[in-house]
Length: 391
Image 1 (spheres, helix red, strand yellow):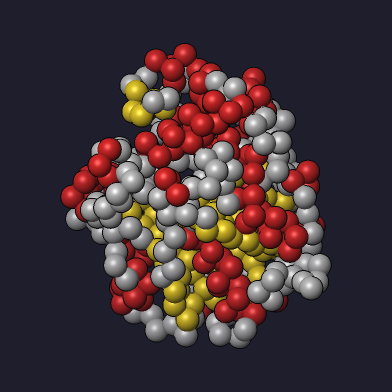
Image 2 (tube, rainbow, N blue to C red; image 1 turned 180 degrees about the vertical axis):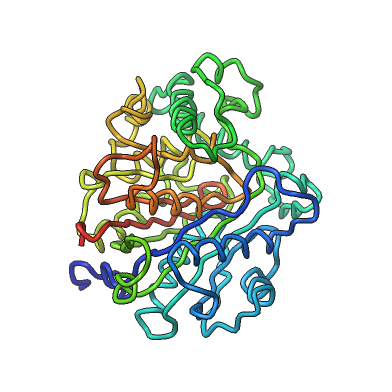
């Protein structure tokens, strides 16, 4: 039986911490900028954030939809020869899983300072670098607009089963925009109303363009090290209290239940390791590729009962001043979304725990959940972080 504070794979609560966090350039990068350029920018900035250098790095973790061997490419670019490198790729949830893998390597003595990096030129490259999708006999003949059609299917099912309304989904986009208006780095900061969301261009019914994430360039990195070393560095550590993951399907046509994601299982693992429950979490950062993902994850992470997500987010409940701070950067809906958003969820969680978020700072934040989603609700990975006060 797993002991309290321990993961089934032997990871221990608080044994590792995120000590550096930074974005690369965001938005639309200069012509000729590569995904590895952006990863390297993020690594340099994250190391500077915590007072370490490339000479300290002996673990490299990276994922990318535009680089076939991203960790190797990044090591070549930075002239690193780490003891551990890992390019585990599960879509946007990869980076939370990299945190768990980095902690495992650190606890096993395989490395001491690991960087987790990402880069994407999705906006500037357009469709030139989009890999062709695999043929699926149950989906491809119907010519879906993937991934939007897959998420629209989940949204439609949730509306059918639980009476969730278009207005409730729109509230999620409006809340994200209100947080983005407090974030100088956000791509979209213009005022947004529920009526604006509903009146915007339809992408895949019932989702309009304002229910869908941004398309931007960008990247970033975090630095993970042992708890012993973390306390001697430049910034307050964000300790890894719990981790968990779940793979439930690849294609949306094989999803066991369109209204319940693997986040229910990944969160249960993370909470058990952390010794915490949803009521103990101060700040919530979830992967919001579409408005429906925020709603599903709030349910599956335990912040409201299944089917209650629509009512839970109504009336500004997750916006600034609401009862639960969710996606305080503005999220993938308004801050940035360069192909895969999971790393940015971790970066914002770390900054909130350090108290670095200025006008959008959640007062007294000591615990945060960072949840990643990959594919079409396919892979889910959850990280619970905390300050020294939460240990």
